[in-house]
Structure formats: structure tokens, C-alpha cells
Length: 83
Image (cartoon, rainbow, N blue to C red; front, side, top):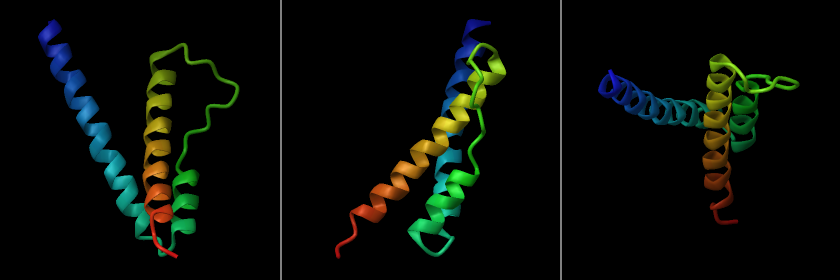
């Protein structure tokens, strides 16, 4: 059973990376970096006032963090442009 769980865990983590890249690609298709970041912000799951105590809460936090990581990559890409 533990091997199945580890395989599922690895697959899930890989899936988060793939979905983060999909969020980045979609955001960058919005035309400007500002629009990209605004779009990413609009995709966040609202967890205000909730403690991370259930599996669903932890999953929601992971998705929220994935979007934050995507926003950071888009922001870094924008800030690395020459002016």
C-alpha cells in the first residue's frame, strides 16, 4: 500500500508543476504582465478565516500556493525585461 501512496504522491506533485505551467501560459496570453498577474490573482481560492485542518483545506492551500508560485514566475519574467 505504501508504494501505491508514494506513486500517487509523486504523480500529484508532478501534476502541480504541470498545472502551474498551464496557469503561467494562460496568464501570459492575456497581453500584458499586469493583466497576467490580475488574472492569476482572480484564480486564487479564498481561504481567509479558515484553518488548514482538513484534507480539503490542505489541498486548497496547495492550489493557492501553486498559483502564488505562478504569479512569482510571471512577475520575475516581467521584472527581468530591460527598460
